[in-house]
Amino acid sequence: MATPKVTPEQFASTVFDYIIVGGGTAGLVLATRLSEDPSKIVGVIEAGDWDPNVNAINIPGLCGSILGNPQYDWAFMSVPQKHANDRPVFQPREKAVGGSSMLNLLGYSRAAAHEYDAIEALGNPGWNWQEFLKYLKKTETTLPPSDIAKEQGLSPPDPKYHGDSGPIVKQYPTWFNPLHKSFLDTLEKLGVPRNADPDSGINMGGVTSFMTVDSNAVRTYSASSYYQPNAGRQNLVLLTNSKVAKINLREGTSPLRATGVDFISGEKRYTVSARKEVILAAGAFQTPQILELSGIGNKEILSKHGIHTFIGYDMARLARGGGGGVKDINPKMIYGKAQHRDTQSLAAKAQDEAKALELCRNKVRQKKLPMEVIDAEYQWDRRKLTFYFIAEKRIDFRELVRELFRLYKTRIWMASLGGTANYEQ
Ligand SMILES: Cc1cc2nc3c(=O)[nH]c(=O)nc-3n(C[C@H](O)[C@H](O)[C@H](O)COP(=O)(O)OP(=O)(O)OC[C@H]3O[C@@H](n4cnc5c(N)ncnc54)[C@H](O)[C@@H]3O)c2cc1C
Image (cartoon, rainbow, N blue to C red; front, side, top):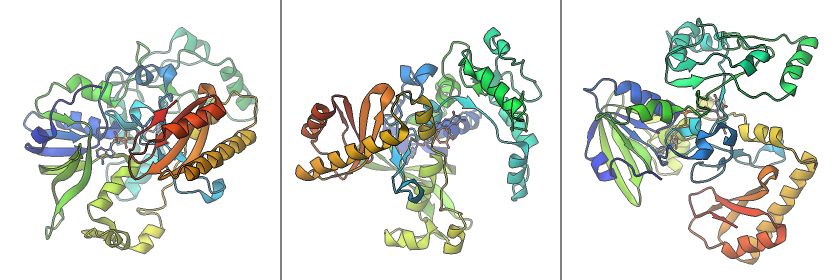
């Protein structure tokens, strides 16, 4: 892995204009844009590492192959889901410079115009489709369709909707499954018309999406397109392998003022100051978590954990979904099904995983290992059986893994959900 450019001590001793929490998709775009003004110093704190040379990230055909790998993935698990037979569901979220744009599935798509307009209607003047479109175009360079894409009936993108000089490069796929055209033809026969440009504000119909892949067939994402070309800026400082613990808020200020953040690097805790703003861009799960750790959230929950409440949400608002009730699609599950090439049915697969989970839990009980095994997942394409677990401290589970390996004769991966050691046989 690459060495961070600054030490935590150097970072903490700098007074920044802006501190951005999370060097992911949004964080790096903001950092790059804000540091265009050389008089402003921008600091980015990212929990993960920075390595621009990982094949599994850069090569589109390998996308998804390091999902669940704790070096790059927080690999969250949901609470047990009532409508999924009480199974917890795997929730990948990436942990590295580039964030989830580093490991996502490269599909480029936009919402419908009326969905953007609805954001404005909720009381946010200017946050409408026409304004968004200007900035969407600014982020991208759209390549013309290759001959292979043309054979699929795809035409050059309309410059009214697609950018031609922004940092993220997108293009139509250069390989198509033989079923692609037949599938869209069939939909058409069933009354679902082809939509030649789903990014034009109308996104219904049979579509072919752009992929965020450049002309060299390499993934293009926030780290490669925004951060990397500007990494030499003196006023853009990136600290890696450091986790923000909370925003520091000044008591008695109105509106409430953020003065900086506390972060943890190695075993040590540091404080760093921001003159102007602290910007949270830690993703959909951890942004609300950091707010809560900082005293912004449901007072009942915060006081249970001894956190002073600066801004409290009321329970009625939470019940309506403002701060609670997260809803999400699970791209991993959908992807997993799409990739499932084994002859065994999905039901049988689920049963196998349930059995493996039970067996692993029994072994953990026999060995009195202080860990809770949450889920088992078998990846048929990689012949890899993964057990997800939580443990409060580092445990030696090599013997457990060896036994599981002897039983299953396949790769065994113990994936920690709490930052403890992982082990593969
Ligand atoms: C498996 C998967 C597939 C996807 N496929 C697609 C797709 O094909 N097309 C598409 O458009 N979208 C896709 N998405 C969604 C898209 O990638 C995300 O919506 C987007 O990247 C989110 O951006 P973000 O800036 O909000 O968060 P992220 O990009 O996730 O960035 C958050 C960053 O904050 C860091 N962080 C978190 N907590 C802390 C902390 N306490 N201290 C410091 N740093 C912290 C994280 O490590 C991370 O780097 C996919 C997402 C996933 C998970």
